[in-house]
Length: 336
Image (cartoon, rainbow, N blue to C red; front, side, top):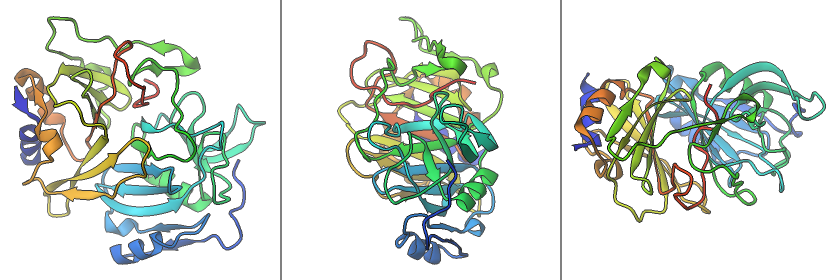
């Protein structure tokens, strides 16, 4: 078995409505200005500092507890906005999603053809990012509403298959009746199978299912399994050893500094608690959680060339497969 950080070290080498009165956006150029503005945002406000990281993969972190969305490009925070998420009875689901569709002029097919500018679909059953009213509390039917100008700027920097992390407890977290982490549905709600490994299978590899796109690795402590997703398609899975007992969900995002060095952005998403602060981890000190993961050497060798800036690793105590027990957490809602 090969330790995951060794792989990473090797990779290092190789309804739109007007915003409330007084709502405003701010364009800034320094991290200090971004931090100062982000700490004082009022409903409808946002701050944007694209020059802090001009290029690279984009990850969005939505904190339902604080009703904010934070944009990271190449692991560097470049924007923060207030949001309005799902109201009681229509709670926004938590989990790790990918962008399935982008439509700048979208209109709802569920709610009277309501305009949803700069829509970025997260699930096929109606959850999306889009511009809309921000009253200062959860008011949507499950979507994540953003200020119009912020939604436009975010739309311009994201790509299909990009990662969106939703955490927090605005109302009760929405738990769907799906049978496991990867209980995906295609267009029209048609279930899609994710076959578990057979008893004698150490790993499975099918990269042709998605030749390109952002890479996400999901590790289930309960199932002792890793699933590799590129875009929204599964391209491999393997048996993995990770210690059990941890109750938090952790997300690691691989980023590249301007000088070329790789580092990790780490988020801890504990169930029922506010989102944790973000920490930057240098490549010389690999995250101890990832360091505990042991993979079959042959699978590690196949995975190694794909571990590039923008790779996301999610480590969760929840199960993949039906019958494993525990509550399901949405990781990828649909496969394209």
